[in-house]
Amino acid sequence: MGRCSRGCAPGLVTRQQVAVEAHQLGIEPGDTVMLHASVGSIGWIVGGPDQVLFGLRDVLGERGTLMMYVGWDGSPYDVTLGMHALPPQIEAAWPVFDPATSRAVREWGVLAEYIRTLPGAVRSAHPDSSFVAIGHGAEAMNSDHPLQYGMGTGSPLAKLCEAKGKVLLIGSPLSNVTLLHLAEHLADVPGKGVVRYWAPILESGTKTWVGIEEFDTTGCLPWRGATDMFEAILQEHIQGGRGTIGRIGAATSYLFDAADLVAFAVDWIEEKLRDPIDDDETVEVRQAESSDHRAVASLLQELEEEMTGTPFPESRASSWADELLESGNCRGFLAVTERDAVGMIVASILSPQRGGIDHAYIVPGHRRRGILRELEIEATTFLRERGCCDVELHVGAENEAAREAWRALGYAPTLESMERQL
Ligand SMILES: CC(C)(COP(=O)(O)OP(=O)(O)OC[C@H]1O[C@@H](n2cnc3c(N)ncnc32)[C@H](O)[C@@H]1OP(=O)(O)O)[C@@H](O)C(=O)NCCC(=O)NCCS
Image 1 (tube, rainbow, N blue to C red):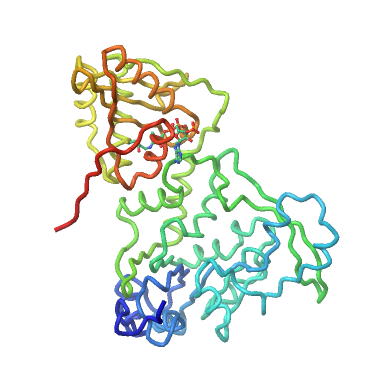
Image 2 (tube, protein in one colour; image 1 turned 135 degrees about the horizontal axis):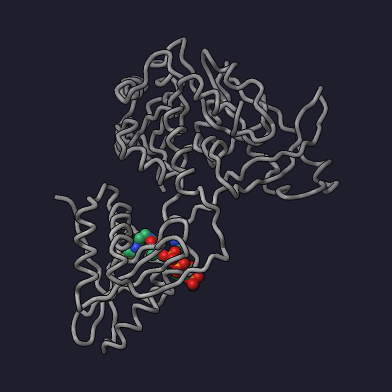
């Protein structure tokens, strides 16, 4: 493939433009900002990726601080995960983590290594979860990074909140917001997964292996929602009017207040995951009765809100539930535990031989446990008894979880409907 020339670049973006647009988004001189960036989505950066960092530092000024999560590309995390003792060959051969020279994780974008190597950048001493900061508060932000539970109390993330810092995403997905690991740490919920691994650090100039413990950053909570948990939290935070959204170059960019986001996320996690998931809990699947009106309306409302990302009025959900429960042409089925209704599905007779399935919904904490499978069996049994030979349903092209689930249940696409914005 030929080298991309300026002529075909999606747009030239200068250091000055980054500064102006970051300021428009809400960054002020003197701010402390944690950055996540996908440089490629910004456009053609005149002078290379460093200019993004320089542009941000131009706005932040002398009293501002810019920070990124950089990690260590050579971390033995994956190799030593869960090991009680270190194999001697690893113990001897693995190079020590040196905050001054050990590389940033490549998969986290080029800027991690760029900021790490800027003159004056300060890196925290954690061998796996290190942060780099530059500017006025860099030293304070990254000193004394706790080795144990390095995303929790006393970590650079906690200090970002104490400093009334902000989180800036430039073209980065919402699922990347590292700060939410602090919320996972702080949330008072049962069943958080803990990982243990080993890392070689320098102690008085000598390589020393240390055992490290932390909440599993690949998902320490039993969240079973279809959307990534961090993304789900941030979507709701944004829907609640928090944070600002704009563009830096061509990149969709977000700015959040760190402490506000963590407080919101802790409440969110505690509300959604307060009750331990009991895998032995019995879930019964049965036909919905008129006495289930409230449960059906509430599940319909949750489904609509998850699908559209906007609030759905309770009154509309209630009259919808009335229609479904009273219609002779369709039948609703519920999945219920001893305490709650946790899922629903509606089967309808569309024509003498054809049935339809609609309103399939399982509450996030109960997904991936076969409940849809059981509801679908009830729904199709009803349709078969009514003489149907086929069943159809509609699923959004972007709803990957549902498409996978229906495929696993034997459904295959027929018509494809397409649209575009005018
Ligand atoms: C889609 C949804 C109903 C699935 O419910 P569920 O109870 O988690 O599904 P089940 O556990 O019964 O899974 C049924 C099959 O689908 C597969 N599946 C379910 N969710 C999946 C996912 N996110 N990715 C891949 N496969 C998935 C399961 O592995 C299972 O197959 P298997 O038995 O061969 O292992 C649920 O995610 C949901 O409520 N989503 C939001 C609402 C929605 O999208 N409704 C559908 C509109 S068309």
